[in-house]
Length: 124
Image (cartoon, rainbow, N blue to C red; front, side, top):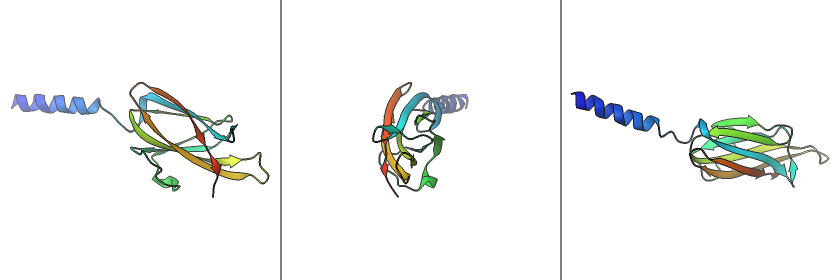
């Protein structure tokens, strides 16, 4: 009986230490949302866990989101895994302002920092 408890404890401890595809981890995805090399201030960046391909434009299916700063910069603290980032914003330098969208897949390892750009284009 005590061996069953010990095995269950070890299995539980091992699975708790192998977090994957979620936020608040020790890895960082840092990036910038850009349109024609110009930062998109205040863009929304959505993240989908356990995704290698574009999951679609419906932002309700994404797992979390952040708001890019005035320079288009954003970051997510996460655990190792596969993620898809989708950026959505407005290019106010174009008259009239255009909605711009784009995305990129990201694979990240434990304690890694990935720096990237989300290149966005005119969308609908």
